[in-house]
Length: 288
Length: 269
Image (cartoon, rainbow over all chains, first blue to last red; front, side, top):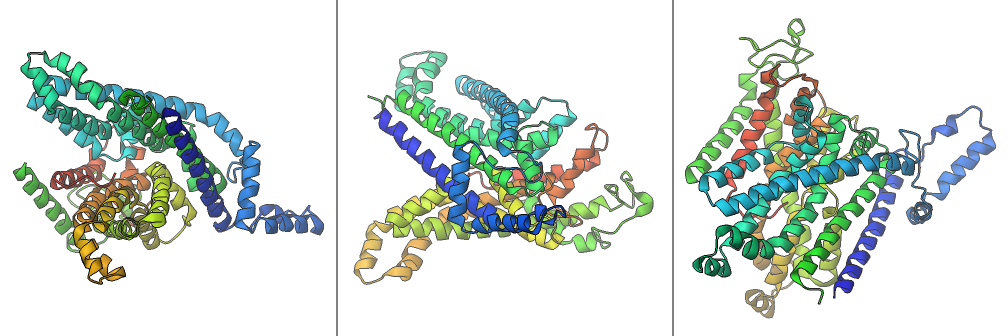
């Protein structure tokens, strides 16, 4: 059953990548200026060379032909060339992915450490004032744009990973708190309390195991939030990662670079969601 | 909670009222330059000081509030209509239509919102007139913000398709668009209302993010996003606190929306 689930996720990811690739190729092909090539203006080129350049552009007019050519090149590791930076896209990604991965992973763990600490302590203490304070804090953070949090982190010399953590914390906290409070109201928890079990024991033996698969699913979704948060944080804090690259590509309308980043980010988020789903199935015991 | 909701409603009405009266409160407009007072701190003439090219910040905040507060609901309306069209129709038709629509929805949902926004925004020309940039920004928010709720609406419409009253209507000879329009769509209204109201604060925040990143409303038109871009030049928080007024207004408005909506079903992401 688990094997079938993993295979289904694998097929879904592959299909999404192929459809996403086709959409991306279509966008690049239809974007204004696709036919223009500044090399054609080079006075050193002979008329035959210019004609050959035009001919190669003509061959790319069919979207499907263009897509299959791009796909073939991508399978060989050639993701095209950035128009604004004049470098191979694969090289740019290789340089920048490690920093973004570190930043996103650290922000994700900081956020989830805070989410679990706050949500579990709220569920354990069950003090209305403490719960209210945590809700107000997360609610306020929810109302501040991600880019402003990034700017404030620059002003206060706070690490970028913490800014990413603060961006995803309020969204995850709300879900985690609601899941825990719903699980607390279930009959088996009331029975455990009636039997005289301590609140801490109830929390870790009867509440957390019930909500763990759902918390994992929320964590999977929050990877997408963390990757999205990387754009303002890297762009405004000056980190040379994929988020900053995407922002620069957007400002320069460098579509080949932007669509490659977009497909990459889609794959990362799909992998994270699928991983969380499979892990959740394992926790629920659906692998039997 | 009821008192907080009432206060939030009053705050929202007040903000809309004040922004609509920007023409009377700041008759000189948002673009007039006071070159002799560029970068001036708050004074009796300029309540929030002037920006680096001498434009009155109070006037820009008023006009920016008007743009953000009036166009976010317009974008929310577009996104709600898209949700009704894609999600509602896919659920009602079912089968291959529903599967195809949900596959497209999943594709959109698998991409982080900000990535999707900047990718599609980059496809459009950046050097357009300010008015066109406003329309493009909010149109984009409306056209891309429907995916989260489309899944919920598709599931609701799908369950309605097999409900007794729809079967009875079908047996009575009601078919096609009339069945959808008269019997299915009215029952989708609660989800659509929730989607509309939840989208407004989400779009206000998205516009602010795009504006700060330089991909939103173009100068000289003000919006909360473009006004918040001024924070980039600050060296410390306490240096020019009046520059934080747009942020305070934005937080107050979004908080008010959250309070008003605290009982609504969470539909949109």
